[in-house]
Image 1 (cartoon, chains in turn blue, red):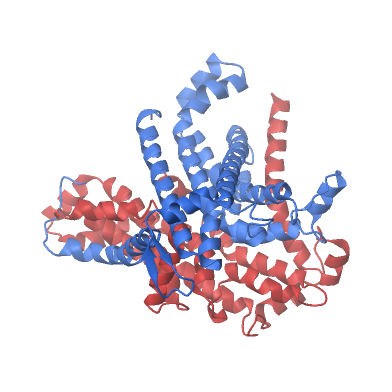
Image 2 (tube, rainbow over the protein chains, first blue to last red):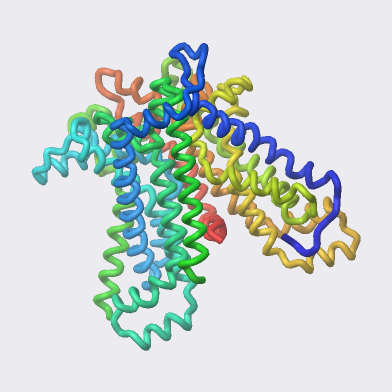
Length: 292
Length: 280
């Protein structure tokens, strides 16, 4: 906060009122509703509901589909974050190192950022299509009986590839900015002390890039959890057999398509707790581990 | 030394190809006839039917009610993108101003409420959000499409960070010259935030345009379809033909990404600055 501030009885309230109104109506109220409904059981016609305590939660947690979806979400998020960060870091390091054509590469590598996950998913549908998709033909030509309609592994490969593709640009922007903010003097000193480029990267560049890396990791996990909804809904709809449904997709499937309000709300609340936990971990790590 | 640089370029070129080739294939294939696509698969070369495909997609009505075309969906997406970004900037510049520049007892309490909205994305509370909007009678309306999306406070945070970085002396000087809160905001703070506003506007426009889940829930009336969610909805219609109209579906995908990509390309510098600044 500023040392110098204005004093006014009404003006700050007026200024903050629109934001607060929207947050109360479209955030606090629905979030409270989700918590409330997670303890209620509604009859199939939505006419009456009764308090059932933690029944919805125990039912969700003991459900094998849910466990499967949680496992898929963990593997999916881990792979999407790792692959898109690794590829983006490699490209950023190379783009940072070259002298000629850097801005051309920068432009070409960044604009995929603007493609919507759902549109990327639609592109994936065509590229992996059984009759017209070149990637489908390519995989088959290598002797892989590629069939994402029936095989969970193949379907997972398609959604992971598309999700990684879509996320590389953002990671590239952050990594390149992080690399370029490393002071010139530090780089030059490292260059004199350590001739081996690979070792220099591990011992000097990477530790200095840690704050950026951690921030990018958080963004990527959030992306893999929430924003990949568009990719999954356009490409697989959780098929085959719920094998590619992330936890967020399951909230939508069970609640909106399956009309199981109580169960879906319980899933929402579990996700809320998960996100809160992640945020707390994030602050802890930011405070302790990573030095600016 | 020279050889190392060559492999660097090779890696970068492979990266560019990996990112751009899929988009090129989608665009190139959209300029071929559906018969060609069905027989030979997606095409890597430019075809002869660019105008035929695109004029049909843009202007011919399709969908369940035979009333939607790409022009209508692009218009809806534009309204969503602009409404979202402008609304967010209007609300967040003044809310952040109140938080940073005013001394009021409930200030930090409000700040924490706003902060908490960052923790829970819309995706985890879709069903209750849908119920709230439907109770308010806002289904199938632009208000219902835009307002709930504005509830997340990302932009408020960017502006709060930015205002905090504005030197104290500026406010002192303005006060000595007799500027009140309104004058200070309009004549000094807003002009200072110009590039910040531009950067956030670009990012928010892209975020708004690219919304998918919320428009799906909100719109059952086809005249409110946005292009990003509309692709999926009318795909069934396109594929229902004797020969699946792949070319049109591909053209629609290309049209859906074109405006946000153009915005990012044209305003490249501001957009990168906005993203990087928001990290701090």
